Image 1: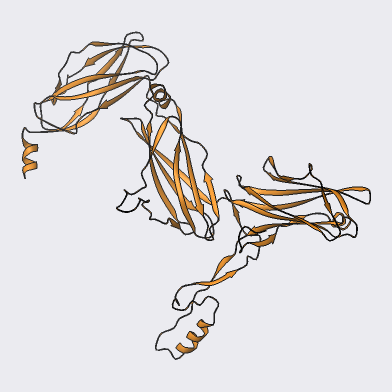
Image 2 (image 1 turned 30 degrees about the vertical axis):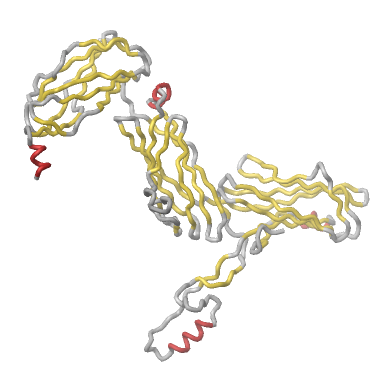
Length: 432
């Protein structure tokens, strides 16, 4: 009957009027199959020179939690029975045991059992025998085990409706069993945008809200169709074995402990999907978590779909690519600029290179080039080259885009920073 030998049965608190309970010949019991816990007790110790040392030692040996050779361990080799219904968490499997017993002296026919689980505004059917009625002789019982994955937080009501026929009379009664479902894990997320490549870094803080220790078996990011996910929480594989997370082979969490996970979401290569990435609200995906309690009970929790607000870039988004962090004096520095149309109309752009007021570098190119028509959501890469004239930190600026239709100028200042060194200084540093 039981899923394993240590399962114990505890009744749920039922609601039913006393008059209704006495007038029926069928008795219904609904219980939860739950697992025991390991008995623990803090050992009492005293100093080796204490006069009561032997007395305390002998008394400790007679305690239930005493383990020979492991006197300082608080967990013993004894299991204790739960004294109540216990706590059930979101994502766990609720296992219920139903027993319907004929307490009368007559045979009961056409027994119909219907069991529903109601939570918030939804009702789920768990068990029904309307298609195959049951017959119970005096003293006989009908037993059934229910299993249901809890997917809501809050008050749940198990509704049991019994219909039967005895002595030619149709009777019906209903019992209600109420229990509370708690949130096991608290997940807080943060998002960081990488402007140069549309990557998004997701930081997830997972906190254990249960009253006991748990083991996190898996915490993964399930990306949306716009992204590919890279797990940044795994160590590289070692010889003669596989890799594991930075938290160790067993990710053990005490109550209140927090784990920090990091994921990198890279846009897929499709151009249509890249255009969706720069919309105002972008779906990122979900975080899926699997854990086990101290007695091995499995639970699963998945966050709601994660979304992020894309920064407002205006009509044009401007991203520099392949730009070096250091360069040499009077040597050409080449880089690329990606221009994206973020508005809903065509843009006819002209590029102007402005060097006035800036004596640290000069643009090496022709100012006033036309880019042509840039359609909504499309992008174009433009190569540029500068020549630094002074050593030190160079602040790249002076790039302007003129839109001929709206006659609007888009000016970009402080695009990037490049450290300019004297010729050969970089090689001298390497030799030293």
